[in-house]
Length: 76
Length: 379
Image (cartoon, rainbow over all chains, first blue to last red; front, side, top):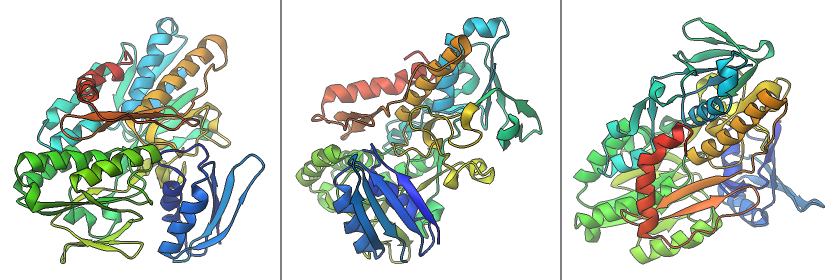
C-alpha cells in the first residue's frame, strides 16, 4: 500500500481539505495520505468529510511548530 | 544564457516579457536568448469566458495573436514540446526539432476534464472554453424555468468561478423575469460555500438573501442524464433542469507522459518556484502547472512570473536570484452583473473581502481590457 504526503501548510485556497479530496482521487483503496496543515479547522473538517464519505481516519497530531499531521486511509 | 519558455499562456508570456525588458542589453549583445514554444499561435484571456456565457462578450474579443504580445527579440515558435529531457537540458518538439537550454521555464497550464466524471460532459454546461461558453449561453437563454444546479469538481482552475457563475446567472434570470420560476441550487465540495473561509462568510448570507439554496460536502460522483440527477460521493443526489459544472482539472498530458508530475502537476518549491528533485536546479515551474497548494488562477501565474523573471534577470546579471515567491494571489469576485469584490492573500495572510461595490466591478471590467498590458509585462 502506498503512502503520500500532501503539504498544505499556508494554503488558504484551495485549502487543506480540497487538497486532500483532490489527492484521494488518485489513490488506491488501502493507500494512506498524511496531510500537513497549519489551519486548525482541518482537525475538524477533514474527519467530518472522511467519515461522511466512508474513508478511515488513522490519526491526528500536532507538532511543536503547530502543524497538524492528519493521516487518512482510502477505504472505498 | 539560453532561456527556454514552454507555454504561451499567462505565466509564460508575462515571464518572457518581464525578463526580456530586464535583460534587453544582454539579449542585444548575444549573452542571453529567450525562446518560447507554444501549442498555439493564439493567446486567450480565459476569465472572459464567464461573460461569453452570460451574453456579455463574444469569444473573438478575448483573443490576440501571441506574437503580437511578445517583446521584440523573443524567438517564438508554434511547436508544442513532446519530450522533456531534463537530464540533458533539451526538449524535443512535435516538428522533431530539438531545443537546448541553460534554463527552462515550464508553464503549460491545466485542462478541464468533464469526461472524468461519468455523465458530466454530455449533460452539463461550463465556461472553460469559448465553445463551451457559447453553448452555456445558448442553454441559459433558452431556459424557461426550473432548477439550476451548480456542481464543482476538484481540483479546478479559477476558484471564484463557482460563486461568480451563480451570482451572474441569478442576475441574468432576474433580468429575464424568471426568478419566480427558477430555483438555484449550489453545491460545493467542503463544509462551507467557498474554500476561503472569509469569502464563504460573505457569500453564504448573499445566497440566503437571494434565496439561493446550497448543499456543502457535495463532491460529484456521476451524472445520471436519463433521470437528470447528480450523485455525490457523500451519498447525496440532486435533480436538475440545467446543470452548470466546474469540471475537475488536470495538468497537461505531456507533463504526465514525461513523468514530470502526477496528474500533470509538477512538484515545485513554494518559494523558489524551481522544480523539486534531481534536475530542478535549472527548471522553473509557473502557474497551474505547479503542484503548490494555492489557487490555480491567472493572478497566481502572473505574480509567480514576475518573481521568476526578476530572479532570472538577477542570475543573468549577478549570478544569483533576489526574490522569494510569497504565495500572492489576487482574485476579483464578480457578485452579479454590476457589483464585485476581491480576495487578496498569500501564504501567511488570509483574505479579508469587503462588501461588493459597483466601483470594484467597474475596475474589473476595465481590467478585462487592460489584461493585454499585463500580458505584455507592463501592468
